Image 1 (cartoon, rainbow, N blue to C red):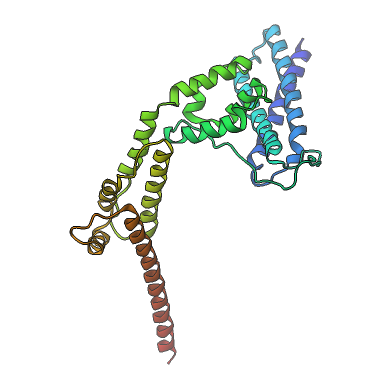
Image 2 (image 1 turned 180 degrees about the vertical axis):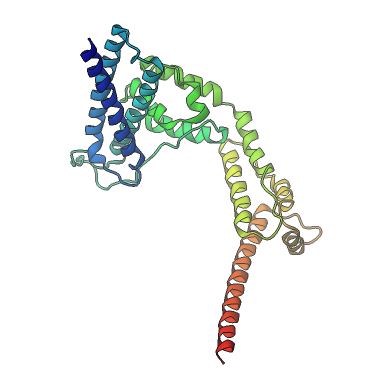
Length: 309
C-alpha cells in the first residue's frame, strides 16, 4: 500500500511540473509564438490531467493525507486556464486563416490576416461592451464551437472580479450558459457604464505646470470616453461647452491664460477648437525643449573651449 501511495504522489508531482512547463509556454507565447506546438501541448495537458485525476481519486479511496481537495481545485483552475488559452489560440488560427499546426493552408486562404484576440475582462464596467461584443463575435455566437469549449475560452479571457463571479461554476455544456448569464446580469448595466465613462472625464488629473504627456493623456482620455458614449447612442454633440469647461479647469494657470487669449470674450468655442489649441501647445512645448537642450549643449561646449584656452 505504501508503494502505491508513493507512486500516486509521484504522478501528481509530475503533473504539477508538466503544468508549470505549460504555463511557461503560455507566458512567452505572445513574444515567441509557436503555433505548431499548440495541438501537441493541448493533448499533453489532457493526458496529464486525466492521470492526475485518477491518482487523486485513488489517494482519496486509500484515505491518505496526500489527498487535498483545495489542491485539486487549484489544479483544476490551472487546467482550465491552460486548456482555454490553447483552444482560443487554435480557434484564432482558424478564424484568421493562419497556418494550422501541421503547416498546411486551407484552399481558400489567399493572405495571412492579422490575429484577432479577445480583450481580457477583469470587471471594469467601461470594458464590458467591447469584451462582450468581441467575445460573442468570435466565440459566443459561433455555432460550430461546443458550449464546453466556449466555457474554456471564457475562463481564459477573464480575470479579477469577473473571474470570481463564476469561479465555482463547473465546466460543462450548461455551465457556459449559466456563467454567461451571470456575467451579463452583473455587468450589462447601461446606466452604470455611461456613468463610468462620464466619471472618467470628471476625475481627470489637474496640471500644476506645463506637461506635454499629461495634457495628451487628458485629451486622449476625453476623446476615448466620448467615442464610447457615442457608440452607446448617447447624444454628445451638444456637450462641447461643458467638456471644454471641465478640461480648461484641468490646465495649469499659464496654459489656461493662453487658451483665454485664443478666443474672444463672446465666442462659443468648440471641442475641435480646443483640440487644435492642444495640438499647437504640444508642438510648441516640444520645440521649446529642443531649443533649451541645444542651448544647454552649446553652453557646455563653450565652457569646455574656455577652459582649454
